Image 1 (spheres, rainbow, N blue to C red):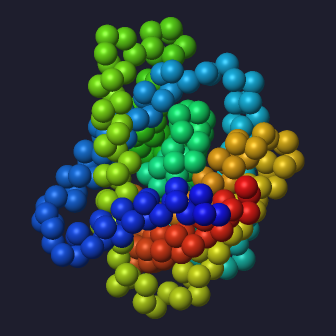
Image 2 (spheres, rainbow, N blue to C red):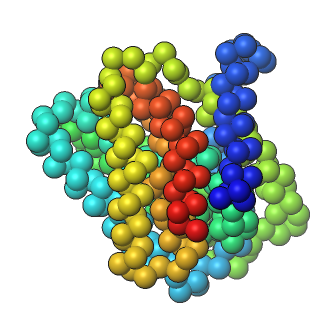
Length: 301
C-alpha cells in the first residue's frame, strides 16, 4: 500500500491543484477551455499514437484482453438496460447514469498505469482504449437519444471525428505497415505526450463542480457505488473467468474502477440530458476515487 500511495498521490495532487487554480482564477477563465482542447486534439492523441506505433500487436494476450473488455462493457450495459426498464428513467437521466457507470477518466487512467507499470502498461492500456472509447461513445449517445430515435450517422459520426480513436487507428496502421516513427518523430511525439497527462489532470480538477452535488443524493451515491465498486468487481470476475495474467487483470479492473470522464458533461449538455446530475456524478466520483482507487489496487496486489 505505501508504494501505491506514493504512485497515486501526485496524480490526485494535480487534480486538486487544477481545482484550486481555477477557483483562484489563475491563469484566467479563458485558459481552461483552450487547455482542454489542446490536450484533447493534440497532446493526448500524440501519446496514444506513439504508444501504439511501437506496440507488440502480435501479443497473444491481446485477443483475450479485448474479449474481457467487451464482455465487461456488455454485461454492464445489460444491467443498466434492466434498471431503466424497472425504474422508468427518461433518456436524459438514463444517459447521465450510463455515462457515470461506463465512461472513464482516460487521463487519470493512463497516468495511473504509467506510474504503476511504465511503458509496457501504457501499451496495453492504449490497446484497451482503442476498443473502449468507441464502444462507450456509441452507448452514451444511444442512451441520451433513445427517446428521440437515433440514426447510424449520429452514432458513428462522433466516433469517426474522435481524435483519440483516430490516433489509435493511426498508430496501429503505422505499426502494422512496418513504418513506425522514423526521422525523429518518436522524440517529437514523446515530448508532446509528456505534457498530456499533467495538463489533463489539471483540467480534470478545473472541471470539478462541488455546487452541483445538491439535491441528487441517492442517485449520486448509487451511481458512485455502481462505478467505483460494482463495475470493478464485475471486471475482476471477467478477468478470473478468462484467466487473464496479473498485469492484464489489474489493467482491466483499473479501467472499470476509474471515475467517469469530465467530457461526459459536454456530451450530456449537447444532447439535452440531465447536466446537473452529470456534473454531480463527475465531481463526486472523482473525489471518492482518491480513496477507492488505492484501496482497490492494494487489494489486487
